[in-house]
Structure formats: structure tokens, C-alpha cells
Length: 379
Image (spheres, one colour):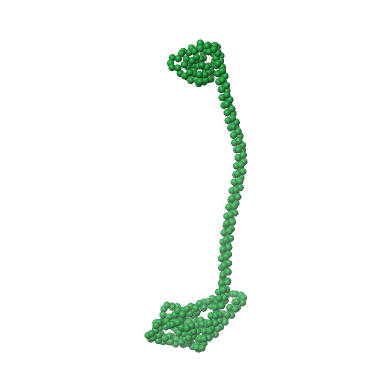
């Protein structure tokens, strides 16, 4: 009934605390009067007429009521099914075309008809009459539980999954089995429908996300490739420009190198010619000097009369001191020399410009422009 689900909803709000009976009564009245989603007929019919205390979903004593772990799990499962059902109904309300929409609409309508047909119709007057009686019975249970000296714990042992008739129920006991079977049938019909809804949503959203991700990766790859190609083209253009510039510079250097090579060859030839000419001139000069020396030496082969005439004009005194080394023809001239007297050169014309000196009592004669001894006359 509706009270069971309302009580579970109030206790599930504070699962770790015991809530006083008066506070539970006020919250249940408020929820039913406000038409809270926790007291909808469809969810109440799913819970059936099972007693929340005998089923082990809640515990009661003199301090108040508290939901158990099994009751909290049951309430969470009912809440999850309600949220999923609302989401499916919202999706079905969206504009769709085709046979799947009609099929889902028929399934939801059938579920709603079953729930409305199987749920107990409770009028406001019935609720007002039943709630005080329910609260009195809960207070009696709390008193009886407190008077038991051997109660091991406030939390009852886990009960069987088959719910028992609730206290204060206005429904017949033989309808519990039919409602349990209806709950099992609804769960069996809801699970495939929920699976299809999840598959449809994943099929609608999944490809879009994969397509967007794939499209983003493709766009990024295309942008990277475009950037790389632009950079490669710019680098290739710069390289081609540098290569053409180097080629033109190389051709200009080659054109400038040809006349330089010719000029260098001419300079080498001129230097070789000058060197050969200098060598020839030096050789000719040496030969000329040699021939002149020979001719002068031959020209100073004085005769006996010429030697006697020279001795008469030039009186060589004998050497008073120690005599030095003898002087020979061809020795270099050392010391000062005196030109021959003009009366002597007049008589011997080839001695014009000749000079003489006395060494070791001997007369040495050197011809014009000669630095060697050309004749030696001794006493």
C-alpha cells in the first residue's frame, strides 16, 4: 500500500538514524497530501501489501523507526526504476518516426494500465481513517518490542523475499500473489525495454562522438600535413634560389679566371726570358772580362828594351827590412799605386793609364782599370 512506500521513503532520508514515530507520521501525512513522487500508485503497487517490518525492511522500538540495509537496497532499486522509467517516457515524448516509437508507446501505455488497474484506489477519506490506525499499531509494536527482555537486536533477521500482508491493510490477502507476479512481470518486461533504450541511445550518441573525434583527428592531421608541406615548399624555393645564385657566381669567377691565367702565363714567360737574358749577360760579361784580362796580360808581355826603359825611369831601391812574400802576376793589388810618368808612357803607348808600385825591391805594374798585378820587374 501507499503507506509502506511512504514510510520507507521517510526512513531512507536518514538511514543512519532512528526517527521518532511522531515525526514519521507527520512526514507520511505531508508526503501523501503533497502527492510526492515517492507515494505514486505505480510504485506502491510494486511494493504490494508486504509488511515493511516483518519483511525486514525496517526496524521499530521505543526510540523510533530505522530502515535496514535490505530496505535501503529495495528503496534504491525502486528509485532507480522510477528514474529510468521517467527518462524512457521523456525520450518517448520526443518527436520520433517509425515503428519502434509506436511499439514503445504501446508498452508504456500497457504498463500504465496494468499499474492503474492493479493498484488499490485509495480515497482521501480512506487515507485519513487508515493513518491513525496504522500509527496506533506501530506504537503498540514499539511498546511490545521494548517489553521483550531477550531481544538480541533492534534489527530483525533477514526475512524471506515473499512479503507478508501488512497490518491495517484494506486489501484482500489473496491479492498479494497476483501483485508479486505483476511486479515480476513488470520487471521482466522493463529490463529488455531498458536495454533497448540504452542501446538506442549509445547507437545515436556513440557514432556522433566517434565521428566528431575522428573528424577532429583528421582535421588536425590535415593541418599538420599542410604546415609541413608549406614549410617544405618554402625551404625548396630558398634552396633553388641559393643554387642558382651559386651557379651564376661560379660562372662569373670562371670568366674572370681565364684572363688571370693568361696574364700569369705571360708574366711567367717574361720572368723566364729576363732570367735567361740576365744569365746570358752575366756569362757574356764574365767571358769578356776573362778575354780582357787575357788580352791585357798578353799586352803586358814587355820586351827587354821596354823593361830596361822602365827600370831607367823608375829606380827601385833595395828592400831594407824583412822581405815579405813575393808578388806574382795575377795577384790582387793591395796598397796605393802611382801612375807611370808621362815621358815613359809616351815611349810605350800601351802603358797609358797604367800604375806602378814597389814591393820588396820589385816594380809591379797594373794596367788601366785592372785590380791585379799585370807585370813584375826585378833588378
